[in-house]
Image (cartoon, rainbow, N blue to C red; front, top):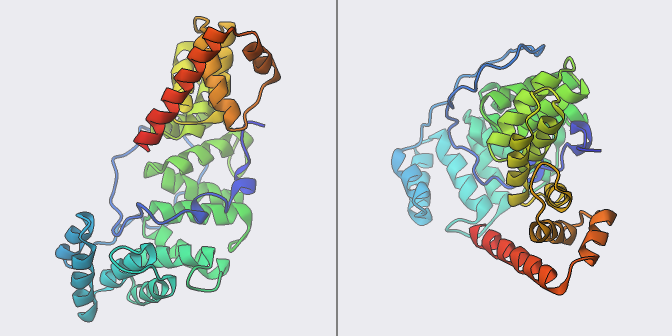
Length: 332
């Protein structure tokens, strides 16, 4: 199976992730290229909530001056500014310039939520899903995600879609999941674009369409999501929902392999081993398979291929694999 269904995969990814990168104030992004007509109802507000907290607190935070950010935020909180509580919550949650404390973080998010800050609602929902600093409660988290999603926060829209897809904290409703995935996808949320494409491939919650699937999976691939790069490479190689283009498929497959996708590395190894689409290259084939196998992606035919290598070929492949690991470890 090329992918887990969204329902099976729900609650294992973004919902369990850290808050790194979540916005204090959502910003509108440039529009995606025109999307093929879709049977997904567009409702709700996409209005963005302006920041209310004094700029010095944000400036200090962005510059990594967390003690100064805390001081500025505390002063703003004393004046009753809602976003200040959200900033204080994040500082406590991530332990930035202060000891990590989920209970205090939750308390600040609660205060920000009471004052109507949508980012506080989203952050509190994340803690409720994980049960950090507060008792785990998917129902309340779902309500908070819904409010933040209506306000236009892409991460909230994505997580609300996952709740609908799993029936955990929201009614199981794949059409609603597709609706919120599209909202997030239109804001260039790569995981939402990929999952929306998966729904169009399966026909869950939307009318099945290989063309729409290819469109959204391509968007996610172009945003650097390795799973999407691999999936789009497969679609390009088969002409599934998009014109068949083998050289382009190789480029996307290579990008996914370079990003660390073990299945992509194994597929790329096969291309180099057997000369499919690309020129045969013993060292590259062995290099990519050594990397893939180390991460659990095995292939009996490639195992036999490795056994036929001579000492010089195997040594060159191992050196190439080591260089790839060193480069990627340094970059990440």
